[in-house]
Image (tube, rainbow, N blue to C red; front, side):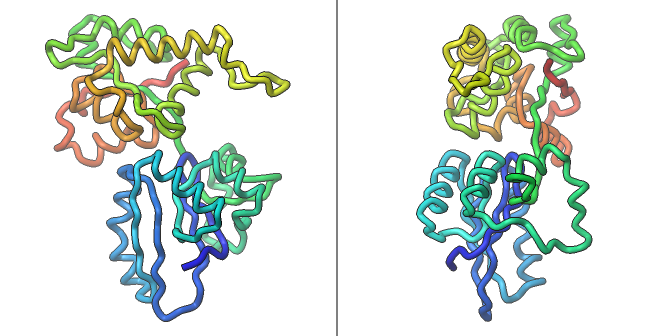
Length: 291
């Protein structure tokens, strides 16, 4: 099927639905990221196909970096390999401004646009024109293990700083006992460790650009943030931390005995609450926002 019009459902990660040509049976090819929420959505395909017997769903589930590369190439070349695309708030305004996406219009009356957070709507708009609808939104949050903190006589502040988390990680790190101070994204990629590093740099007072759009990557604040990230990952992270992707930090906090883990908030509650049998340490988890 060729791409005609795009209806993006987006925020953090998003979905683009291409309008279907009128045929007896259409195959809709969906390219999506391999996180838990999208995989659960894939399991609902049979229900959708039962309700819409003229549509067959074909899923292409890819890890974050591969997905971004393939979708960017497909959109840029107008290849039309995919009909439903998982994209994010980075791509949506860029592609919308280049008219590679159609504005969102003609929604069902029961779809309440005002129910979407204003910041999410703005991130999916160009000059107040909406080019995507959110499937979910995300923010950052920190897991920590209350049982391990209690054993070490430590208390987590209500709004900890990264420096404090680094100090906790050093005190809690016991690799000989299978306990690692902190689990952070280590896998390279815009949607992988750069999402974390950008948030961390902001907390250290760093900026990507100044008011004249001059890069500030050589600033002391960026150096402090980057050094903290690298040193914490190397000194207190679990083994093979360079392969830790966006879907794994919450698992580290439970299954891998990491006292602290950073993850997007929408993913954070998902594993322990939806399948507690798989997460034996879930009851010891608590959440904190960073300063």
